[in-house]
Image (cartoon, rainbow, N blue to C red; front, top):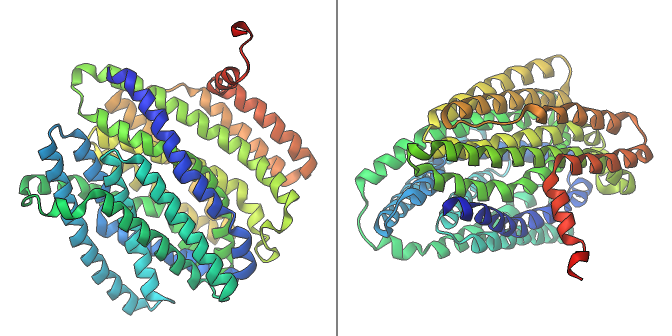
Length: 478
């Protein structure tokens, strides 16, 4: 029964997340012309580096407790057990929030960054929004979660427009707008969790609390290692190359977020299903391995296809709308192909993560991300030292992320029997080819490259061909 319902749930939930997250985040992406026109390059580099550090501190303190709450909530059978998980999770969130504020205040006094209180608030609200979102999703309120994402993003956009255009504020407007949007989002998510009722339903279960902490401790360390893999480059470029290079690097990552946002709807739905299937007996391990393999195969093909399309599309789009990025940020255009490739590897890495949680092998998850982080740090420092600058940081991340994805696939093959077809590797030289076309061919030729990429995507995704066929009129029914 579950094998039939799971795919339907996967696509239905993915659609809800797509409508609620990707479309609103895409609107945030189109604020880029305003940011690059009104915010100096160096200030953008400072903002990007400080927010990255705030996320690091909050990830270290909050231990990815939202993931643990979702994992234990979905595997519990009775309502009483699930309520116990929620009570313990909310208690941990409250304690960890106080600890974060204390640690954040100490760090701000020691290093005195610009707009220090707003930097601390950014990290706190980012962690709470992620954790509360997982609680709401675990309870099945996907539509509420999606709607909250839309409201939060629209508030952020509105505040940025008012502060930057009407009050001529600088990059502090980015902190304030995020605080308003994420703060309202946290309130809405907590309201849906019915936090007042949960806190008065009974005392904390010490057994559940200990299990939750034991599960989340490796996740917290893993979050820090993951930050070193995915976000350390933003800080190193700003510190070692300069604030201007950091600002250019940050804008190139905005284009990469298109792939991240597009994949988010599938990854969120997959996280719920992977956790829900994690409590099956060993007798159905082969069935689980087949299911995981099918979904992973599909996701890899979709991600590679999106990357293949986005590179020439970005080249053509920037030709048609040259002022989308202000001239002061012009160097960011050269970094876009590498940023998009890195984003594709990031979402593949993220997609594989819930399967380790479902198998309760968070130690292996930590191993994979730690090795990737060490490789990324070493290569980033090497490439920057050799004069690679921001492009060197992108290339270092691509190598480290590819190694992390490969290691995770090998580990999942061992623990879950994950089996994938190696033909996906054919897409790697294709992506390299469109990246070369981006740099060395004219926009007119890139239009041809884009059309060729569309044909290749249809060959890679028979599911897309079937969808188009279903949308066309059926002559047999006339």
